[in-house]
Length: 335
Image (cartoon, rainbow, N blue to C red):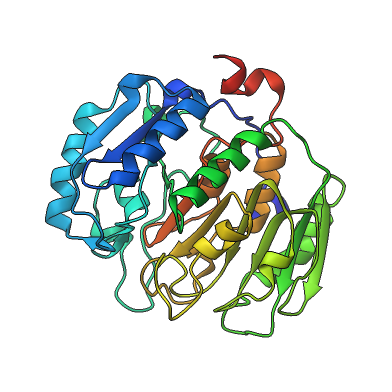
């Protein structure tokens, strides 16, 4: 019953290949093409999987109408084998009331939005065992290759590639903070530790600050701003996020942007682009993330499968990172 309650017990290992990933380029953003070519080279993405669209550069958000034009162009250029998208830019990260990663994955749909404290549509991909989300569910999960600079994006990509099949000795840090409004995931932590501690070191920490650790693979917390994150050493492939209202506003200043995790050395993060209220369903379930990653699934799989209501949340990171995958599951070994 606990495994059902917490959404654990995955049975699928990573099977993402380079042929299953398409990179979307914004031709109005000079860095976008550079990011795309860098990622293509690092992961062996086929030339036919490079998709070009034209999006006004520099804006945080685009309208539903403009997005629908772009979405039709993306769909038209997407080879049938593609199951996932990598979006090679940092702006825009929002489409009206949706994140751009969810809009690209599902198509724009107001059922994935909410005004005020209301639920949104459930993702059919949530905790799914499918390895072919487009073929089975008509969903192509998307992740942004975004960062505070071109150099940071390249460094993040390098960390993801370097993580493959390393099976590191690392730790999952689950922070129970003093911020009651944002500490909503902490009720899960004791069960996560009980179920997964034989597979990875799990530390439950009461407090707001994690400092001077050299083995961070997972870091989940709930605060508007997280102190001392650069004092820690993130293992290649690391996933870190903070439950707060506007972490997905990548260039906002009111709360800490999720890009600060990537600046500190994480390989992926997640945050909401509009006010979500404190629904845990709108944020990653740490138990699902940790167990599926340990089972060998890739980063885009585990992160996307961990969010029940992802319409308002943006995923940033290197999609194909697979630190716990077996050798014969890694696309880089097939090229």
